[in-house]
Image 1 (cartoon, rainbow over the protein chains, first blue to last red):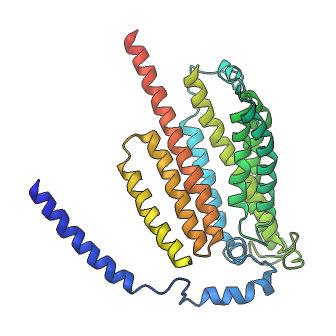
Image 2: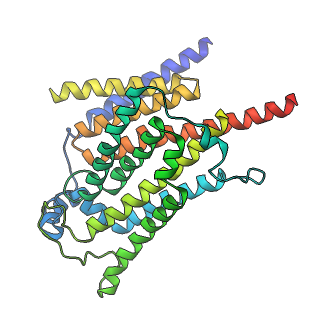
Length: 246
Length: 88
């Protein structure tokens, strides 16, 4: 016991000293010593008409990386769905009693809050997806925000309402369309005789929602794919919880 | 002003991270990790990275706790089924 304390004290002292020395050598907050950031900050509005430089990098200059990221998400949703799929023996579909049994909560306050929260969430999510090129946000973040709307519905209405709003066929189709759409938009560049994922659509006015060419549409496809993927995960999760309750 | 806020958030982040490790109950831990993600996103926002902050909220405060809860629900159901079989 005593030896452990001594060892810990020695380790903590060493780590503290090294950490302090390292922290003293850090550049000041906001300090930046690279070259690419400065270059992109200077050229991206002129070249791509995107006022959010982060989006310009994610969906244009490094669009191929984002394609990879999107398929990471796609693969992980696929993995969860495969691992937690229905085993033989429980063949019923989602009309099973578990989904029927869950009633809306008794509290009026919860239901009224839900009525207010759902349109807010949906419009904020759509705003974030569609204005990815203009302001912070974009397909990934907006898609997750959008996906919380069905969750709010589940929390303040019957479980069946969740299924009516986000039926399994719809989420699966949207996930596929979103993931595939990215590649299709990327191919527009090839069709125009340029590179894959090259920004070939009209660029529009910087700062307007309809601007930045393919960046807007890539954001839309990513938004659809992410929202659908998360709703799919939510549905699996809710199913597990419901089965436990009944 | 910003410096003081930064300092405060760093301390809060360290406390939240420690609490995640100290929490032994997985269900409570998922809430703790969600709070940790929220504080981290505030710190990102303060460092002028709103894009990263939004992603951090989405992943750290929503998606990660959700995955943990999903895993817990699955484990509990499997355990209940096993106990039901043993009692039979």
